[in-house]
Amino acid sequence: MDDAGTPIVPNVENVKGLKTSSEPAGKQRKPRLQKSASSSTNLTSGEKSSSSKKAGKKAPPPWTFPKNTLEDSIKIARALEEQNAGNPMKPDMLSKAVGYNSTSDWRFLDLLRSANQYQLVTGSGKISPVSLTEIGQDVVAPSSPSARPKALQKAFRSVDDFRKVEEFYRGKKLPEDEFFENTLFREFSIPRERVKNFIDIFTSNLNYLHAFQPDRTSPGPVVESELRPREPDIPSHEDGNSGRQFLDTCFVMMPFGQWMDTYYREIYVPAIREAGLEPVRADELFSTGSVIEQIWEQISRAKVLLADLTGKNANVFYELGLAHAANKPVVFTTGQLEDVPFDLRHLRVAIYDIHDPAWGDKLKVSLTTYLRAAKAEPAKSVPQPFREQLALAE
Image: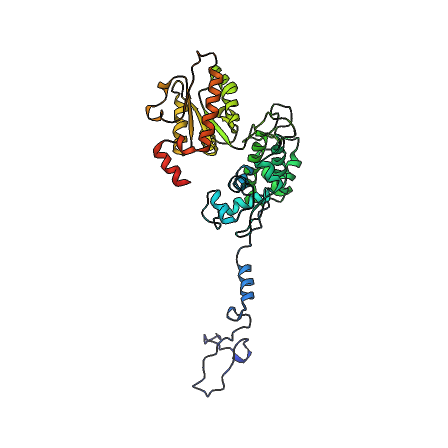
C-alpha cells in the first residue's frame, strides 16, 4: 500500500513464475503460477520414492543378532532331525513341524532366521529347502557326550555380537544394567532400542550353556549383575558329563526336604535320564523373574512332567493344575494311592512302598518305563478334557 492506503499492484512482468496474457483488456485472465519442473506431479516414480524416503523416517538397520534364544532356535534343527531324519525340508513342511501354519508367519521367519544366525541350519527363505549344518547335527544328534556342549558353544559364538561381548567380559562380572546397556551401545554399536533385547537373549543363552557345563561346581568367573545375581559365565570345560545331557526336560513337582531330596537325587534323576530326559526341579532354577514365572516357564518347556503326590502337598497340586492347563503329560508317583485324586488314578501312577527292600530299584524301572511311554504317547498322560485340546493343538 502507498501512504494513502491504496494497494500497490506488482508489475507482473517482474514477478518470477507469473506471465501476462496477450488477450485484450477486459478479457485478460488472472495471472497464475507456472508449474515447476520439480513439482510432485512431474516426478518420476524413482524421484517420488526418493522424495518419500527423505520425508519419511530412516529405515532401521538390519538385526545383527538373533531375535530368539539358542534354546528356542534349536526347535528348527530338531524338527529336521525328528520329522525328516535329518534330511532337508521345504519351509512349508518345516513351519508346520514347529507349530506354524504358514511360511509367512513372522514368528516362524524370525525363528528360522535365528537358527541360521546360530549356524544350526542353512536356508532361510520361503521356498528353498532348509538343511542341518554340522553344528546343528551335533546339537540334536551328537555322536559323543562331549559333542553337544561343544556344538552349543560354537552355535553361540557363531553370532559375532555375542562372541565379541563374551570375549570382552571373559573373566569379569557383567556390570549393572545401566552401564551394561551403555557399553553395548558405545563399544559394540548395538542400537539403543535393541539393547534390552540383546541383554535378555545374551544372558538367557549364558544360562542355557551353563546348564550343559560338565562341571558346574568348578571354580571360575561368575557373570553377575544386580538383576541377574546367579547367572554364570560361558562354560570353559570341554570334557565330562556331569552337566545337562538332554535337550528335552522333565520338570519334577515334589515336596522338598531331607528324604524327598534324597529320593530326587538317587531315584528320580537316574530314572528320568534313563528315559532320555533332563530332570529339572524348582529349587534348581536361577533365572530372572518371580518363582511362579520361572515354574510356568519350565512347565511350558518340559516334554514330560513327574509329580510326587505323597502327602498332598499344596504347592505340588498347584503346579499340577498349571501343567494340566498347559496340556502337558504328567506321570504320577506316590507312597500311597489315597494321595492321588480319584479322577486321576486311571493315568500312569507309579506306587512305591518304602518297606520293600528293593523299592528304590523297582521305582526307578517303573518311572523310566512310564516316562518313555508318556514321551511317545503324551495324550495318554493328560486328563480327558485337556486331551481333546492337546489333539487340536497338534
